[in-house]
Length: 155
Image 1: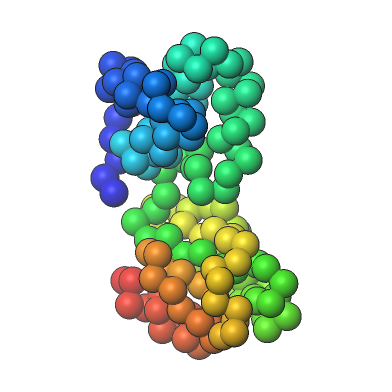
Image 2: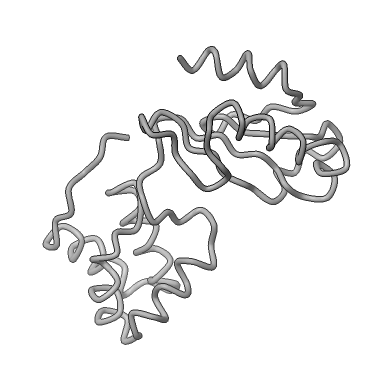
């Protein structure tokens, strides 16, 4: 997703459409992330005013859900399952391997903004763990060699 510059009027429109909806704050957060690729900090006061909350409450909701980002993701997003089944089948070793290859840790993006590495907690594919997603495509029985091959295909 191309990076989009913050626009308060546009953000206000996204939020205004959600105020009347049940669960409107979540809808607004999803809308802002869809528009900007993350939840801009500038939006907290707008959200707080619209939903009669404090900015801290808005941040609390946003930070509770791991899929809401504070900064735009890289061009490619790799998520490595950290749930029990995947851990038992080597996801921690896999995570350490990819962190070393990319020079980043979980929750970070490469300096060239090419790849973001994230943790996920259960992809529902436990029978073939460890599991990862690359740009939302699921891969099971992942190991270091297969992951390196996938990274090579990302360019």
